[in-house]
Image (cartoon, rainbow, N blue to C red; front, top):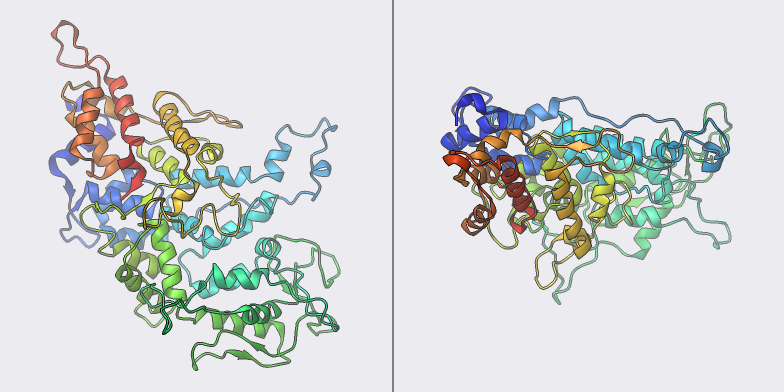
Length: 563
């Protein structure tokens, strides 16, 4: 094999097989980061180990790469025009000027799905995009209810912009986000009626506690349950607490549109945060009674006094939630599950929660510091883990992006239907509990495997079909312009060698960070054809061998589990 015949990927794979490392950290000191370690790190911290990203991690080192990612400008979602609420009015069928794609582009999340995949495939700010996607699965708003992409884009940008910020700030911005206000009824939530027959809506109060912050039961710092004297979990709150928080969240409505008069219930406006309705200067739709909140420490007020302004009640209530000792382990575990492994040890959760509680400078809720601690933790780094309960099933979106980034894909971003066929329809979570239940237990085991909650025989078959189409043709989903294709030319030189070990080793390093079992290597080698007419020293089916090897690796159970 000569250097003239080797293109970028093949050259890199060959050198990495010989050397296995690249030295020089960001500070100039020797720091060996093996290719396999860089690949594994990028599986956890990005949307896939692209060749350029692997080289950057090896050149900088893990910590310096994370620091560099923090400073990159955010790849955001587009600001889209608002359309009439009635799609028949916004996209009249009998109007010759109406585009055939009008409904798709203005009344579905298609434009945001396309931008998501473009950001995931080619955005420089990979860590921000991956963390924002994780946060979107913890703090959920769904296109199943929020129809227009112009309505959902500000929520998605909020997560992107605050992915490395403070969780207390994020909670406040999410609480006042109009898409969330619509989705969980924070907007236009009225105070109790004088006769007591009408009560505030409890939807947002319930979910901010159960799903966005503290969960149902008291936790130790390591995420394990606190138990009472009878060995039973201790609830974090009761129905009365939910009712009191619902009263806190009364009086907020959508921001008035330009030129419109403010009302108690303003019409939907997704382009500005919620506002507190005021009549003659008074927030007359806010419950002014005292409110008993979470009571867990003398250091944080658990009772809001009567006659406070709605803004003051909101700020103090969010402080009351944010300071609860459950928040650190609760959020840390969710992030670990989304990035690294579905079954983190209590010690791992405890170490990450400790950083959430104090980033080393006295700040609580620092998301970047927490993510950094998660990704640099000894349970995430080091030798590849082989325990049966370690790792996570690659969720469909990540499964798609990992393979595309590995082989320098060219894509128009029209990929959402492919992930949908595997069980995950991007931005259309079926409920506030996410695409899949975060506490789902793999059948027949005691191990948590959230992503297995949407895995099925049909989804598994569609994963295999996706890989086949990717390896053998161009992906042309409905609505695609140019489609999606990958570049396997860099592997053809390895595929031409009758000895399949180089090709298999290259795919093993790039896709599986050298974790492939010997049995798998043997099976793949036996499946690769090789014809050498006239005594040639190369296989004439070089590209076919690459396609077969890629298909077998990417559909294997060993690849499907990110370890």
